[in-house]
Image (tube, rainbow, N blue to C red; front, side, top):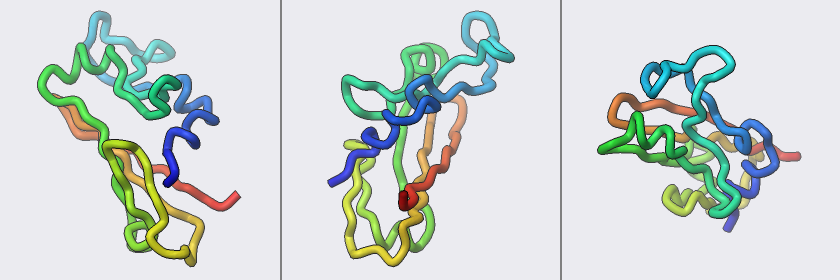
Amino acid sequence: MYKFGDYFKNHNFWVNGCSWDVYGGPKNLTGKDLPVLIKYDFATNKLVITDYAKKYFGKRRCELKFQPQGNETTAGLEIDSDEQTFKLKVVPTTTNFQIKIDYNTDFSNQNLFFRIVEG
């Protein structure tokens, strides 16, 4: 069993948070002041939706879902979206797995894609 968080915690992009160009919130932030909606949380070792995102964009629905992307990833990995973990189903013939993160709120559905590559 592998935890996605073990990969995210080593990258400033996730630790500092993923900013979005969104409208709403207290000041309609733009430019360098874009709000962080998703970031890595050291306490849970997971990606989490920030309190800011929950407050302004997710009163009824605010969720992250991890999904395999592509045939090789679907065949090679079993993903537990709630626990943000994965395990190998078969010995992979590739080391280039693509994962899609769905970020769903009251106002929109967004997607982020990332790869797990050999290295």
